[in-house]
Image (tube, rainbow, N blue to C red; front, side):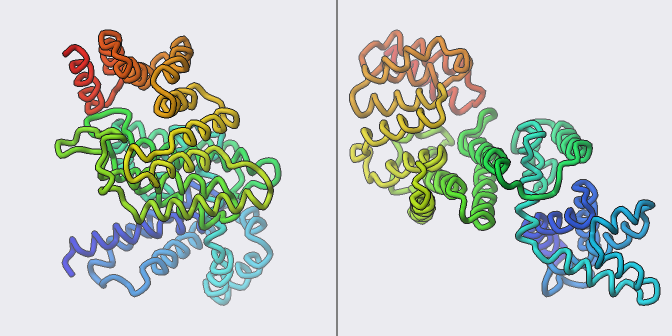
Length: 431
């Protein structure tokens, strides 16, 4: 194996193992920033040793052992060792005392036990990285860094922002978590629902930025979609009894199934009703429908209604089940948007409901709802409002008004591909 092959293998192992590594270390040292530093030290050791000695049989265990030894060194050097001993428990205190004569063997055994519940630690790390005390941008950056294993440079490239900006967000996030003494734990009781909502929001924000890039030259950023899906699937495994987790996974799986059909040969956007549905990924659709079924079964036990993500997944499922655009059950989609509007009212949900109403009952029906949203402050800079209004006006034959709406939408969007599409539609209205 060449050195470049080894480095590629190390990169792949790091993407898989880094989150588990950082999670386990955080529970030991009780400091997220320090845990990441220890994990990075283990990565550096791998980069130095594996090209020379070969890739170990169990790379993840090698990294964990290397990081654990560094954790031992740090614990020994810390002046406030007694405080750390109390946090790690009586077993560690005994091990530290005996290690004076027995070496590090006793201490390593206790650390092995302390790092035993990796799945629980991963869940703790998810809730810590997505803590509401952090800004949305900070939560997204920290999640991609700690749970996605992405470098600062990769995150910056994905979001089209300077690398220094991302580094600053991550640094401030760690400092905020330390200064506010955010506990490394899974919330329970009344805290669980809002904290879980924060986690799901971060994962879906990552997915959406990949699915419909808000800025730049590309319509899609597949790497972000894949990372969000991976995080969602991990979360579903860690919290199998939470229906909204399965609802979000279902939504992302079904939406991701359309990715190949959403872009034309020249990279231009292809709208839903114009897509070649034979290019939709049926495996992802089946996975999404299965996740939606799991969410439905969980809420059926309690008699509670589907949550916002599960409702959106149910809407996406209507499209996924329709082999042709004409076969789409638009009345059901409009009804589901009505339920979503009651559960999580927002102008954006109303705009989507207007589209569904127009498809189910005619463009005039949808336009009446859209016209009621024109003065909505939250949609003042939202390019999809004039885009939807332009589409409905065009269907009603009011082409001059429609062209003006498409031009306004083109001015508001920051995505180059979407701007081209909107300007083309404006030109078609002129003709």
